[in-house]
Image (cartoon, rainbow, N blue to C red; front, side):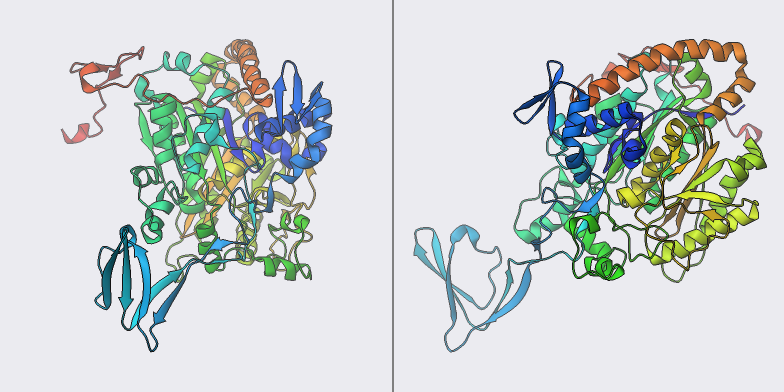
Length: 636
């Protein structure tokens, strides 16, 4: 019997804010929220970004003290709106009007040789053949050059791309723990994984006491590594800039490092670990690993996630040079504008509309999965379940970046599984698609064709399609996580986020069997039984995940475990929900801090008790069994 991987916690940080308890989703549909939910999310964003601080039952906003969340929400709403989602790149990231772009030149001597002075410590290690050095004392040397000299002049230029989906302005994850020069993506991962773990409402140590240490797994990574100055970005450019390479840039730049950090500094995990990479499908690749670990019985608890921080001048320029990003001049041309104002930058990403390229984004998202039996035993809240994740390559390609055929297979299999599990009527009437939706002219045609042809094949008359990159931008490997967490909120609030930045659907979009809503679509909290998360990635990395609604999961688990077991689970769940809400309220007030254990309970081989049957670890209640099943019994 395969265990069902149920979602018992989720968290993260994106341009919409904190993901746990649906706050990031709430930001997308802010105008549709009830008063309390709206106030909580605005307060959460205000404390997250440092606009406000909770003191003695009140909220400090600058020099002003406000008595409650209602007053604070009214005071900060516009500022919170302005500092979230896609917007013009803020100077906290980099100055779009002064991007470093040093200029090489060749200086040639005229009638007289070139002469200049340098401090001795600035002289190159290898002196060119046409240089003559004269030590003039005082730690200086006069250089005479016959002929020419290669120079690089410090220079800058205005970025041709000035919009991005950035984390809320003012949020600095590295200040919430001892970040020790960690690259931004890893700072985000520490915050996001902590948010997900605490959203569960069950103390991690109490979960660990129920399990063998090797029944826990972490699958997390990003698609291109840490490319800011504290990671691979600095490693590759510092020598050319005359800066010293540090001891941390190389190791902390690796793309699997989000998983490594969680194992070492959050969980103390000694179970399975891994970080799959697959461009835009990276999150779903890792989710597939987590699903298979639980379904196969190897693990009972899995943390799945990703963390990408690509809003840097170099990465943006790299994608721009490919012709993939929406440049300012192209955005202005779409609307016949002479120049872009602040509000126009917020409309940069237009999935399935007349568009000109994607918008870069940053995000870190994590998901806590449990086997269904463990979730019932612990009383864990169930937010949905991952039925499966399907992955296919594109076959032969002309251009490595061009889309291909693999996505037809992944989405078709995901749709087929939903029909098998829930019935054809459920697939046709109560499922929706969270599209990759990058806002490139090529994607709007090719992905709409994939979804539309799948809808035709399964007789789906008007398949609702959402695309949250319209709000968040494209966070590269973590994009699937953005899509997933924006979908979980639909089962709480009943609203599918619409394509609100898209003025109209483009003429070349295939939509005969699709519903591409330009406004938010109200379907009710139990109006949808499933969502299909789609990733159509660079290089032929395609993945589609079939996610089941919590009300559907409860029905399935009742069939497996019986009504008595489910009633007992609901009773235990009440206390878990109370504990989770305690964390939520602390986070709203800005009082929660990430989990980070540095130099904590570090073990060596001498600390272990090893026999032929098991290994016992100090601090862990249960041993790791060394008895493994022989998968090759027929060969022995």
